[in-house]
Length: 325
Image 1 (cartoon, helix red, strand yellow):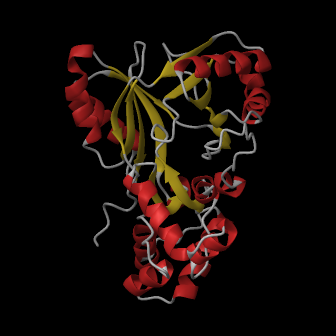
Image 2 (cartoon, rainbow, N blue to C red):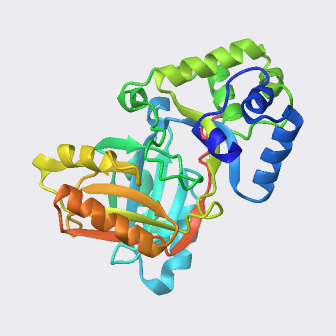
């Protein structure tokens, strides 16, 4: 199935749609038309590079804010105005606004979050960075085959969080800005990107491959709209886990195909949870069954499932928005 194929990896060759056509028993024009239709229906957001923001010098974190219900819209507008906020959801509980944020090199994550909290209304806010990542897998079982072998993002990308190998030259920044956008539906799309960047097609493809190997890029693939492809519910499960067991139990969670993301995050005053797993399901009931199964697997009963009940913001993060064009 084309949708399944392109979310796992997109061929990094001069004529990628011809390459896909050969494996699907179609022709290139038909493949391009089908991908265009998938985008038109909202099933595919875009086909592009997916970067490791830490390797590019960004600092990122999950942030939770405790906002009075009557002030949610005002607070969300203030938070969403920052271009580094890519996702912002309403979830049940005292801490009810949950957003992800990335700040560019040389900016202070803590200062930016503090400023957003004040602009939002001075609400209590906790910063929950990933202390360790056990799994980043973004492939959904759209074929409903029970596939537990989701494609995980390259482990090398985790190792570059602190020691970036990315050189922030004007040329490299221009490439990032270009390939984070949607790949053109043209016979030779990388040639078109190369033309805009004033570099050869082969040079661009080799650079993309090198960045993948170095962990600067996580993947080059299609990004799906989870709800549009049938995954109507997503739950963030948080456990209160003894610190000495976090690594071992995080590894157990990561081994389950239903888990797409798994992290160790710090416990905070008033928020004792430190082990996180994101799951996606076709219903709330399915997510609850998965949570029960995972809880049994790791032997922890102190957990919550935080379902997203409202989406304030969901965009692809645009990197290097502060640098001059």
